[in-house]
Image (cartoon, helix red, strand yellow):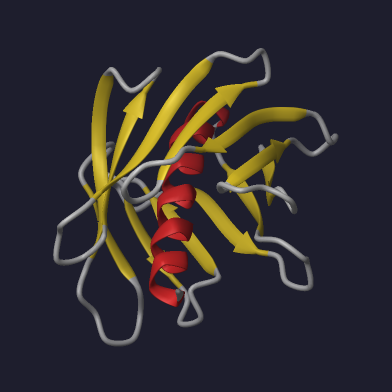
Length: 159
C-alpha cells in the first residue's frame, strides 16, 4: 500500500492530507496548539484514530503515540544521540527505524528485521511531501504516526 503524505500549503498549524495511490483521502492530520508538537489523525470518515504528542522538557526529542482520541497509549519514539546517521528508539511493535544521512529517507523494520515500511521524502515540492510504502495495510496508521514524529523532530531541530 502506498500513501502520499502531503503538508497543506496554507495552515497555521502543521496539517497534512494523506492520500492513497488513486488520490483518495485516507487520513487527515491536524496540528493543535500546545507546548510542543501535537497531531490528531482522522480517518476519511472523520473519526479520530490516533494522536502524536511531543513530550517537552526532555534532553532529546520524544513523542508519545496513542490510538483513538488519545486514550490508549501504544508507545513512544525518541531520538537517539548519534553523530552521523539518525536513529530513533521505538518502544512498541518491536519496530526500529533507520534513516539516510540527509534524513529524507527512512525504513521501518519489524523485530525480525523484515521491512514494514519505506518512507521517501519527495523533493521539489512547496511543502513537505513523503511517499510511504507500507507492506501490510494494517500497519499504515502506525507508520504514519512515526513519520509525523520524525518530521516534527527534524522541523524542531531546523528552526
